[in-house]
Length: 81
Image (tube, rainbow, N blue to C red):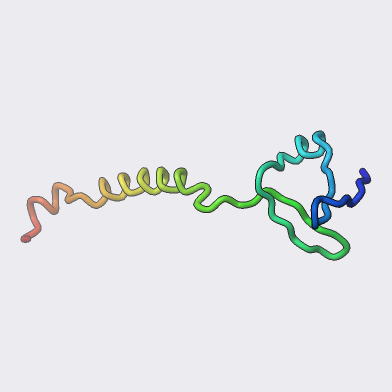
């Protein structure tokens, strides 16, 4: 697919076809990276993305760890605290 570099105010840019954006899922803020022979365009990483899922996973694992570390019957009867 070809496109032209166009004047946008004091800058230059390119128009990306809607179909191309839909196929790639690119929208909103993007990151640009210089590569050999070109420029890579990708969705910008959002700070703290994925933290909600990570916290849920940690909370589930902590609950299991806590249950495993509770005193068992032997420790309750035989251990001197």
